[in-house]
Image (tube, rainbow, N blue to C red; front, top):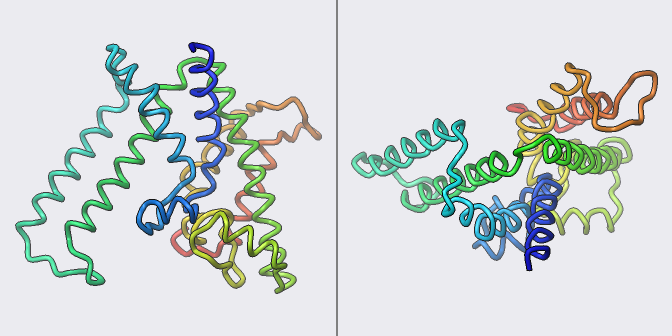
Length: 243
């Protein structure tokens, strides 16, 4: 049972990191009531929260110190949301305020769970190395897919039906954007945020520090250098103003 437990937890962690590029899986979106925010990774996050993180917390392992400011921020956000009921705020898109607030709090809570799981999981150099390896491999697949997407929608102006069908399987947006790349995300702006907030900082930091987790190098150019360059190019292909 212990071996099975280790297999499930390690596999869940690997899949959580691997599927980060998919932000709005249609099947999951329908199961969650039609929300656009339906990352595939959340399935494995839930598994880890209930079978690994909560049991560890109950055993007295506590939280990393760096999570304290984040939890304070969550508390302030929750209090400010509750205080909003004392203000005459009009409806937005005919959606009641409590639904908007609930959506925001749940989204923030999910983000915090991602952070807490990561902070608690990566406790040694081996786990850190594994994390970067998975990020590099899944990120490379995401970028390759985005380049192919860009070729179809920006150069050839013709998208094969199988490609459209696959996009519809992984993104609840249900469409490809004209002359814009959205990768595996819901829309180009989400894709740009993904690159700006997660992938580019990692590859930029590794490139500056000249750290690589892969032995293959071409003229001292590492895989992380290539991923950084391609991610910057793809960022501009998204044509996201805020990104």
